[in-house]
Amino acid sequence: LVLLDKCVLLLKGFETSDPERLSNALLHLGKIYLKKRSVDNAMVHFDEALVIRKKLKKNEIGISEVLFQIGGVRELKKQYLESLVCYEESLKLRLSVLGEDEDTADIISRIGEVRRIRGQYDLALENFTLALDMYKNTVGETHLSVANTYHSLGYVCDAKNDAQKAMQNHKEGLSVRKLILGGDHVKIAASLDDVAGMYQKQNEQKKALKCLTEALRIRKLMLGGNDIEIGKTLFGMGIIFAAINDSEMAMDCYSGSLEISSHDGSNPKLEAQ
Image 1: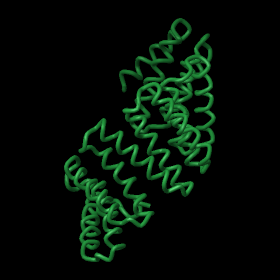
Image 2 (image 1 turned 30 degrees about the vertical axis):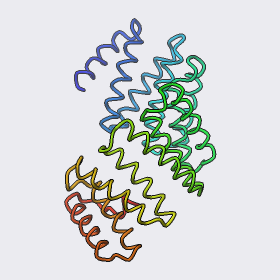
Image 3 (image 1 turned 120 degrees about the horizontal axis):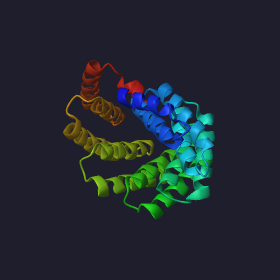
Image 4 (image 1 turned 120 degrees about the vertical axis):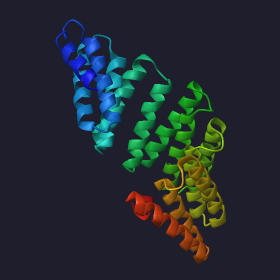
Protein backbone atom coordinates (compact mmCIF):
# COMPACT_ATOMS: atom_id res chain seq x y z
CA LEU A 1 0.00 0.00 0.00
CA VAL A 2 2.82 2.42 0.86
CA LEU A 3 4.61 1.51 -2.38
CA LEU A 4 1.46 2.10 -4.41
CA ASP A 5 0.96 5.47 -2.72
CA LYS A 6 4.49 6.43 -3.78
CA CYS A 7 3.79 5.28 -7.34
CA VAL A 8 0.68 7.46 -7.45
CA LEU A 9 2.67 10.47 -6.26
CA LEU A 10 5.25 9.78 -8.96
CA LEU A 11 2.59 9.44 -11.65
CA LYS A 12 1.00 12.72 -10.63
CA GLY A 13 4.15 14.40 -11.85
CA PHE A 14 3.34 13.02 -15.32
CA GLU A 15 -0.43 13.52 -15.23
CA THR A 16 -0.53 15.54 -18.43
CA SER A 17 1.45 12.93 -20.39
CA ASP A 18 -0.16 9.74 -19.00
CA PRO A 19 -3.47 10.55 -17.29
CA GLU A 20 -4.96 7.13 -18.03
CA ARG A 21 -2.24 5.29 -16.11
CA LEU A 22 -2.65 7.71 -13.20
CA SER A 23 -6.42 7.18 -13.10
CA ASN A 24 -5.90 3.40 -13.13
CA ALA A 25 -3.47 3.63 -10.21
CA LEU A 26 -5.85 5.85 -8.25
CA LEU A 27 -8.71 3.43 -8.88
CA HIS A 28 -6.62 0.45 -7.81
CA LEU A 29 -5.46 2.22 -4.67
CA GLY A 30 -9.03 3.21 -3.86
CA LYS A 31 -10.10 -0.45 -4.12
CA ILE A 32 -7.35 -1.48 -1.71
CA TYR A 33 -8.45 1.15 0.80
CA LEU A 34 -12.04 -0.05 0.37
CA LYS A 35 -11.06 -3.64 1.16
CA LYS A 36 -9.41 -2.34 4.32
CA ARG A 37 -12.66 -0.48 5.14
CA SER A 38 -10.87 2.85 4.94
CA VAL A 39 -13.81 4.34 3.08
CA ASP A 40 -12.79 7.99 3.32
CA ASN A 41 -9.38 7.31 1.78
CA ALA A 42 -11.06 5.18 -0.87
CA MET A 43 -13.43 8.01 -1.75
CA VAL A 44 -10.59 10.52 -2.11
CA HIS A 45 -8.84 8.29 -4.66
CA PHE A 46 -12.02 7.41 -6.53
CA ASP A 47 -12.95 11.09 -6.79
CA GLU A 48 -9.52 11.92 -8.21
CA ALA A 49 -9.77 9.06 -10.70
CA LEU A 50 -13.22 10.26 -11.78
CA VAL A 51 -12.01 13.81 -12.45
CA ILE A 52 -9.20 12.51 -14.64
CA ARG A 53 -11.34 10.01 -16.53
CA LYS A 54 -13.98 12.60 -17.32
CA LYS A 55 -11.28 14.56 -19.17
CA LEU A 56 -10.41 11.59 -21.38
CA LYS A 57 -12.27 11.16 -24.68
CA LYS A 58 -14.54 8.16 -25.33
CA ASN A 59 -14.09 6.84 -21.82
CA GLU A 60 -17.64 5.94 -20.86
CA ILE A 61 -16.69 2.51 -19.50
CA GLY A 62 -13.83 3.95 -17.45
CA ILE A 63 -16.14 6.58 -15.95
CA SER A 64 -18.81 3.94 -15.31
CA GLU A 65 -16.31 1.80 -13.43
CA VAL A 66 -15.32 4.63 -11.09
CA LEU A 67 -18.93 5.70 -10.52
CA PHE A 68 -19.76 2.13 -9.53
CA GLN A 69 -16.99 2.19 -6.91
CA ILE A 70 -18.12 5.59 -5.61
CA GLY A 71 -21.65 4.23 -5.38
CA GLY A 72 -20.33 1.36 -3.28
CA VAL A 73 -18.61 3.75 -0.88
CA ARG A 74 -21.77 5.85 -0.59
CA GLU A 75 -23.72 2.68 0.14
CA LEU A 76 -21.28 1.66 2.88
CA LYS A 77 -21.64 5.13 4.39
CA LYS A 78 -25.44 4.69 4.24
CA GLN A 79 -25.75 7.62 1.86
CA TYR A 80 -28.30 5.68 -0.14
CA LEU A 81 -29.72 8.42 -2.35
CA GLU A 82 -26.23 9.53 -3.43
CA SER A 83 -25.29 5.88 -3.97
CA LEU A 84 -28.32 5.36 -6.18
CA VAL A 85 -27.43 8.38 -8.33
CA CYS A 86 -23.92 7.00 -8.89
CA TYR A 87 -25.13 3.49 -9.70
CA GLU A 88 -27.76 4.74 -12.14
CA GLU A 89 -25.27 6.98 -13.97
CA SER A 90 -22.80 4.10 -14.07
CA LEU A 91 -25.49 1.85 -15.55
CA LYS A 92 -26.50 4.42 -18.17
CA LEU A 93 -22.92 4.83 -19.39
CA ARG A 94 -22.26 1.09 -19.50
CA LEU A 95 -25.47 0.29 -21.37
CA SER A 96 -24.68 2.98 -23.95
CA VAL A 97 -21.49 1.18 -24.95
CA LEU A 98 -21.62 -2.51 -24.02
CA GLY A 99 -25.24 -3.34 -23.41
CA GLU A 100 -26.09 -6.34 -21.26
CA ASP A 101 -23.26 -8.31 -19.61
CA GLU A 102 -22.29 -9.62 -16.18
CA ASP A 103 -20.90 -6.29 -14.96
CA THR A 104 -24.09 -4.53 -16.07
CA ALA A 105 -26.09 -7.07 -14.06
CA ASP A 106 -23.87 -6.32 -11.05
CA ILE A 107 -24.81 -2.63 -11.25
CA ILE A 108 -28.52 -3.40 -11.59
CA SER A 109 -28.27 -5.72 -8.60
CA ARG A 110 -26.70 -2.98 -6.46
CA ILE A 111 -29.46 -0.58 -7.52
CA GLY A 112 -31.96 -3.19 -6.42
CA GLU A 113 -30.24 -3.61 -3.06
CA VAL A 114 -30.24 0.12 -2.35
CA ARG A 115 -33.91 0.32 -3.26
CA ARG A 116 -34.64 -2.65 -0.99
CA ILE A 117 -32.90 -0.90 1.89
CA ARG A 118 -34.89 2.27 1.19
CA GLY A 119 -38.15 0.30 1.23
CA GLN A 120 -38.81 0.69 -2.50
CA TYR A 121 -39.76 -2.95 -2.81
CA ASP A 122 -41.58 -2.89 -6.15
CA LEU A 123 -38.67 -1.15 -7.86
CA ALA A 124 -36.19 -3.46 -6.13
CA LEU A 125 -38.16 -6.47 -7.36
CA GLU A 126 -37.93 -5.15 -10.92
CA ASN A 127 -34.18 -4.61 -10.60
CA PHE A 128 -33.43 -8.04 -9.14
CA THR A 129 -35.64 -9.77 -11.71
CA LEU A 130 -33.83 -7.96 -14.53
CA ALA A 131 -30.43 -8.75 -12.99
CA LEU A 132 -31.37 -12.43 -12.61
CA ASP A 133 -32.36 -12.73 -16.27
CA MET A 134 -29.18 -10.92 -17.33
CA TYR A 135 -26.97 -13.20 -15.23
CA LYS A 136 -28.64 -16.29 -16.67
CA ASN A 137 -28.13 -14.99 -20.21
CA THR A 138 -24.47 -14.04 -19.69
CA VAL A 139 -22.92 -16.43 -17.14
CA GLY A 140 -25.44 -19.26 -17.13
CA GLU A 141 -27.93 -20.52 -14.57
CA THR A 142 -25.33 -22.24 -12.40
CA HIS A 143 -23.44 -19.25 -11.05
CA LEU A 144 -23.08 -17.72 -7.59
CA SER A 145 -24.44 -14.39 -8.82
CA VAL A 146 -27.62 -16.22 -9.84
CA ALA A 147 -27.89 -17.82 -6.39
CA ASN A 148 -27.26 -14.48 -4.64
CA THR A 149 -29.94 -12.79 -6.73
CA TYR A 150 -32.48 -15.49 -5.91
CA HIS A 151 -31.89 -14.74 -2.23
CA SER A 152 -32.19 -10.99 -2.86
CA LEU A 153 -35.55 -11.65 -4.51
CA GLY A 154 -36.48 -13.73 -1.48
CA TYR A 155 -35.76 -10.83 0.88
CA VAL A 156 -37.86 -8.45 -1.21
CA CYS A 157 -40.79 -10.90 -1.49
CA ASP A 158 -40.62 -11.44 2.26
CA ALA A 159 -40.74 -7.66 2.82
CA LYS A 160 -43.79 -7.55 0.54
CA ASN A 161 -45.41 -10.29 2.68
CA ASP A 162 -45.36 -12.78 -0.18
CA ALA A 163 -44.13 -15.75 1.82
CA GLN A 164 -44.71 -18.29 -0.94
CA LYS A 165 -42.53 -16.50 -3.48
CA ALA A 166 -39.95 -15.67 -0.83
CA MET A 167 -39.63 -19.35 0.08
CA GLN A 168 -39.46 -20.33 -3.59
CA ASN A 169 -36.62 -17.88 -4.26
CA HIS A 170 -34.63 -18.87 -1.17
CA LYS A 171 -34.93 -22.54 -2.10
CA GLU A 172 -33.76 -21.75 -5.64
CA GLY A 173 -30.77 -19.90 -4.19
CA LEU A 174 -29.97 -22.87 -1.96
CA SER A 175 -30.22 -25.31 -4.88
CA VAL A 176 -27.89 -23.28 -7.09
CA ARG A 177 -25.33 -22.89 -4.30
CA LYS A 178 -25.40 -26.64 -3.66
CA LEU A 179 -24.75 -27.33 -7.35
CA ILE A 180 -21.73 -25.03 -7.32
CA LEU A 181 -20.30 -25.44 -3.83
CA GLY A 182 -21.33 -28.94 -2.81
CA GLY A 183 -22.86 -29.70 0.57
CA ASP A 184 -20.43 -28.26 3.11
CA HIS A 185 -19.86 -24.53 2.65
CA VAL A 186 -20.66 -21.48 4.77
CA LYS A 187 -22.76 -20.04 1.93
CA ILE A 188 -24.89 -23.19 2.01
CA ALA A 189 -25.37 -22.61 5.74
CA ALA A 190 -26.44 -19.01 5.02
CA SER A 191 -28.99 -20.27 2.47
CA LEU A 192 -30.33 -22.74 5.01
CA ASP A 193 -30.76 -19.85 7.46
CA ASP A 194 -32.93 -18.04 4.92
CA VAL A 195 -35.08 -21.10 4.23
CA ALA A 196 -35.39 -21.75 7.98
CA GLY A 197 -36.55 -18.18 8.52
CA MET A 198 -39.36 -18.64 6.03
CA TYR A 199 -40.42 -21.93 7.60
CA GLN A 200 -40.59 -20.17 10.96
CA LYS A 201 -42.85 -17.48 9.54
CA GLN A 202 -45.12 -20.24 8.23
CA ASN A 203 -45.07 -21.83 11.70
CA GLU A 204 -43.40 -24.97 10.35
CA GLN A 205 -40.98 -25.12 13.25
CA LYS A 206 -39.73 -28.68 12.74
CA LYS A 207 -38.75 -27.96 9.13
CA ALA A 208 -37.02 -24.78 10.27
CA LEU A 209 -35.18 -26.73 12.96
CA LYS A 210 -34.01 -29.28 10.39
CA CYS A 211 -32.51 -26.50 8.28
CA LEU A 212 -30.75 -24.86 11.22
CA THR A 213 -29.44 -28.21 12.48
CA GLU A 214 -27.81 -28.76 9.10
CA ALA A 215 -26.50 -25.18 9.07
CA LEU A 216 -25.02 -25.76 12.52
CA ARG A 217 -23.29 -28.96 11.37
CA ILE A 218 -21.76 -27.16 8.38
CA ARG A 219 -20.56 -24.21 10.45
CA LYS A 220 -18.98 -26.42 13.08
CA LEU A 221 -17.20 -28.34 10.33
CA MET A 222 -16.03 -25.27 8.40
CA LEU A 223 -15.52 -22.67 11.13
CA GLY A 224 -14.67 -24.55 14.30
CA GLY A 225 -16.65 -24.69 17.53
CA ASN A 226 -16.55 -21.11 18.80
CA ASP A 227 -17.27 -18.95 15.76
CA ILE A 228 -19.87 -16.25 16.33
CA GLU A 229 -21.97 -17.60 13.43
CA ILE A 230 -22.35 -20.84 15.38
CA GLY A 231 -23.55 -18.80 18.34
CA LYS A 232 -26.17 -17.11 16.17
CA THR A 233 -27.34 -20.47 14.82
CA LEU A 234 -27.65 -21.90 18.32
CA PHE A 235 -29.64 -18.85 19.38
CA GLY A 236 -32.02 -19.34 16.44
CA MET A 237 -32.43 -23.00 17.33
CA GLY A 238 -33.18 -21.97 20.91
CA ILE A 239 -36.05 -19.81 19.69
CA ILE A 240 -37.53 -22.75 17.78
CA PHE A 241 -37.19 -25.17 20.70
CA ALA A 242 -38.91 -22.62 22.91
CA ALA A 243 -41.72 -22.29 20.35
CA ILE A 244 -42.33 -26.06 20.40
CA ASN A 245 -42.18 -26.10 24.21
CA ASP A 246 -38.91 -28.01 24.51
CA SER A 247 -37.51 -25.84 27.28
CA GLU A 248 -34.57 -28.14 28.04
CA MET A 249 -33.21 -28.04 24.49
CA ALA A 250 -33.95 -24.33 24.25
CA MET A 251 -31.88 -23.71 27.38
CA ASP A 252 -29.03 -25.83 26.03
CA CYS A 253 -28.96 -23.81 22.80
CA TYR A 254 -29.17 -20.47 24.58
CA SER A 255 -26.38 -21.51 26.95
CA GLY A 256 -24.16 -22.58 24.04
CA SER A 257 -24.86 -19.32 22.24
CA LEU A 258 -24.13 -17.28 25.36
CA GLU A 259 -20.84 -19.08 25.94
CA ILE A 260 -19.66 -18.29 22.42
CA SER A 261 -20.82 -14.67 22.60
CA SER A 262 -19.01 -14.18 25.90
CA HIS A 263 -15.72 -15.04 24.17
CA ASP A 264 -16.54 -12.92 21.12
CA GLY A 265 -17.99 -9.94 22.99
CA SER A 266 -21.11 -9.81 20.80
CA ASN A 267 -24.81 -10.28 21.45
CA PRO A 268 -26.46 -12.90 19.20
CA LYS A 269 -29.93 -11.70 20.16
CA LEU A 270 -29.24 -8.16 19.02
CA GLU A 271 -27.40 -9.25 15.88
CA ALA A 272 -30.16 -11.67 14.96
CA GLN A 273 -32.58 -8.75 14.98
